[in-house]
Length: 131
Image (cartoon, rainbow, N blue to C red; front, side, top):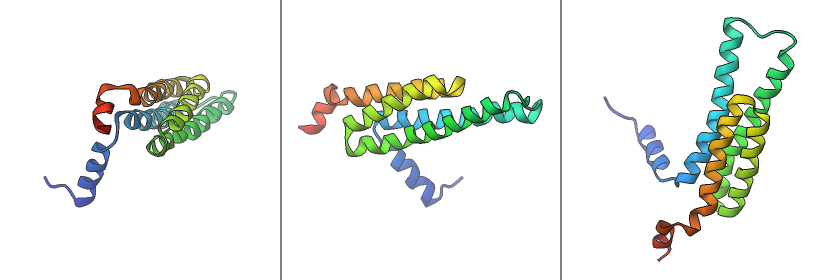
């Protein structure tokens, strides 16, 4: 079983990311994928009632937009750590509040990533990197 060059490069880039970046990316992906899976399976098996369709579409769109923004907040933390942590914290709270069950899961993971990003300058291993 062999890996292609692109797959090996992608794994190496993923391994070079900081833990808070990985948590932010995971939170965004969880919100998007879980909302697609939960409501997609419900739609495929028994269908979604007409009176619930407006709510489901709203929740899926909110999770898609806020989850994608949380995923992009990981890139913001690479440029400016505190700005990225603030953006990720706000997006995580919004996602947890408005995103129903999948958004709550992704939002809480995003909030944990924002807390870790904000605390990174004060962690002992961060001081060793600067020295």
